[in-house]
Length: 145
Image 1 (cartoon, rainbow, N blue to C red):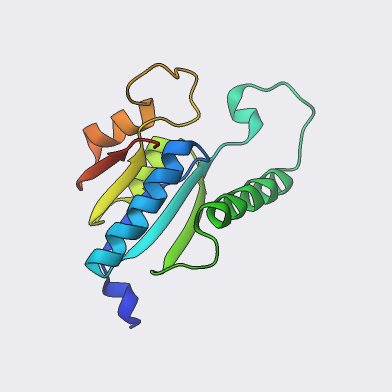
Image 2: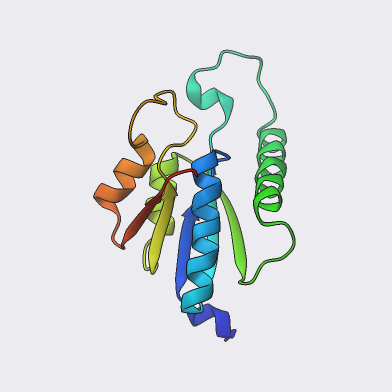
């Protein structure tokens, strides 16, 4: 078994928002302190999920675009200098469901205070609120700086 298989897991939600960038940086610092690994988790939903009435599109193409965007996002925030192991995971589904599932058995779940939702004046986003209410591990909510 790999030594990092038993390392504490720090799960962090990544959605491209400024607060998720701050959450990712916080997760890296915390994992460094506790000798853990970071699981950077993103969620994506195809346009058809939102009732988009466009011509049928190739789901594989949508997934490829989402994968590229997610990888670019991680690289933009972290670069190549990563003091701890970062395990990227992009999952199709509702963001709060994906994060709650990923955080099962984790040391901590880290989320940004506001994502790309439409209510920019809200103190907390719907995903961070739901995670704080339903996670089975501690939740850290990080604001953008």
